[in-house]
Image (cartoon, rainbow over all chains, first blue to last red; front, side, top):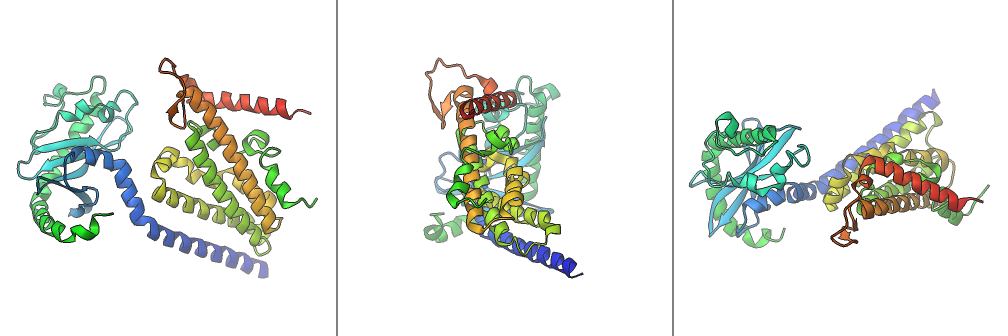
Length: 209
Length: 197
């Protein structure tokens, strides 16, 4: 009996101690990890979309509720105007979800740029969606609210040769991005208005993140 | 029987160097040694876990009831592995991305559990620390050398910098899994030839 109690006590204390340690470490590193993930996974795509922006879109971000999901939006400032946002949407590819970062101008409703953030497509075939910049470049300047389809399905998207499923996934992701945009546009406009006034105020302290 | 602390440390570097002598911990050895950076990153992460778990297991060796010792060791090891994982995500994110699933898999690395069970649970703290450090550094050296060979021949680079001229055609077999086995086999062979009495 004594041995049994000892076993229970030792394991409980050990687990509790370990849980406490990990929880506090997780809290301590949470912001840092989130920023690192942004920087290395989504960062290249975001910075590519916002080439020439005068702010750091990785720092100027906010979240909005879309039904039950929470989405992150990144704000780009061009020529003193904060009228561009980028957000992520997903389309089903050949080897899982393809993550797309879509940048859109709220005044014109046109796409300013598209970047692939995550994908697990066949290397050298579907993976060209990420590595071949000319594929995503074709979306630049198109209105985001249209339905995207590859040419083989009667649409407007030039598919990557040999990677139709991947191209369809990207098209579906963009169509989905259009739907998200339509749903959230009024809220986005409100947020951006606040942002352009708020950004001026907090500029000094927050710039060196 | 009683060896000095230095002896415990040194044995891990050659006499009991894990992947080559004990042929333990082969999963990370084969999987993450595509480049020398990945090899060293994995080695350092494992060394950290090994040293911390060895010290803690040794410190608690008289408290832990022997019937639940494996469970207790796993809790201790898993805690430190999660610590490494969080720290890596926070500070060396690209390395975390390239090591991927093999970081959490350190929990089931038989070297770590093996040292806890076979050494730390029976020896004093300082000896366990030296043992963990020695074995860990030995593991790191093994992974780094394997990674260096595979990187030089497989991608024609060393630490990311090209070593051969532009005419070099990478021997991509070395980067793939069979290349890892062949390379490890050849290194075992060399170790045995050199160490033969």
